[in-house]
Amino acid sequence: MSLFLQIWGGIAYLLAKILLSYAEGLSDDRKWRMAGWAAYVAGLPAWIILLASKQTWIACAVEAGGAPALILGLVIAWKRITHINKTIDWCIKIFTYLMIVLGISYSIYDFKGITTLTQVLEIGVTFGFLLGTYLLAKKKSAGWLLFAEMLICMCIIMLIQGNFILVVQQALSLVIAIIGFVRSCKRIKNIS
Image 1 (cartoon, helix red, strand yellow):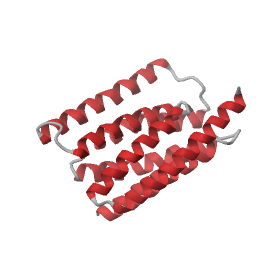
Image 2 (cartoon, one colour):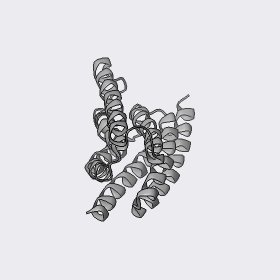
Image 3 (cartoon, rainbow, N blue to C red):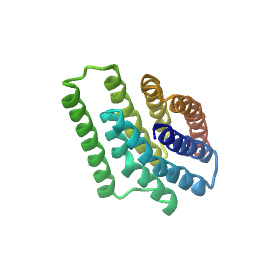
């Protein structure tokens, strides 16, 4: 089961990063962004199941908490929205922060404190994934940098847990995140 989840989640998330990174250099990026966000949504269940099965509660909550931001990215691309409704934006932020608090709280309860390296890395994943996803949904370059930080932390977690397919996927994703950041900076420079 673990191997299947690694392949499913790894391929979907790697494909998402490739598509979103490619979209950064295009003037008409709609279909590429839609495909990228859809790939993220498709891979999300595999990551949640895999992380929960390893009692990686913080990262599991982060993945679940990121779902609204992933859907927001898909809707923004689909409808070509340039400004997000403030109420929707506020609700996504509240849900995201709630999931962070729940994930960290349950991890502290389950492990009787912050007692493992994995928990510390999960906190790094939390900020990188949730803030990175949110900023990428809004086409902000800083989202790629936060993704890079998240990928490094998640790569180490996957290595500790012996999920070697996902170690490779995270390393490849890091390269793609750096490319996405460079392309995003060029896109912003060309707009100015």
